Length: 196
Image (cartoon, rainbow, N blue to C red):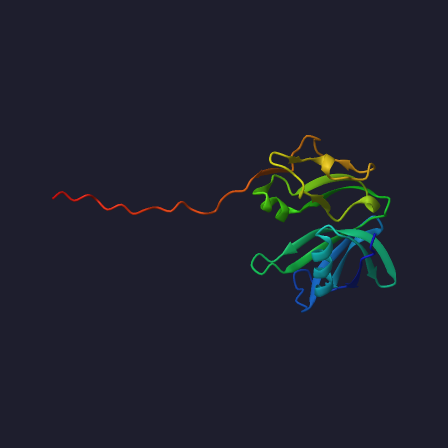
């Protein structure tokens, strides 16, 4: 597993007053944090982690002289700009058992289109229980060889046997359907008949 490190800087300003350009406010809490700690992260570094590893990315947080393991628990974004305005990081041990929602990434949709098929997604994430160390940033499913009527279920995810899915095994996450045509039928204009 790639080690992702985020530098956190403690902040002491009044709640709701954070206006520092280039930084995003956040909070650390969890196993080895007795009180929630208000911190700030470099905005570009944080955005890069979330873009590359998802909004539940597992991270090492460097704060002062300590380095703690955890995961991004919540990301708040500005409703208009989409910029990250706050982030919560839960500190846990790698052996910590927890429940996480993991995004499902479907690959190979272009191959389906060549066969006039498309992917109809019912659920784009899955709830998983297990040790933090085994958790994935995302689950990748190759749909390129799927046929019309095929469904994507838990059996397509190749999860570690120590991870438990917190959903029914017969849940259908996606189905392969016929490609919908986007072309509208051409209407021909008919002229009313005139009697001579």
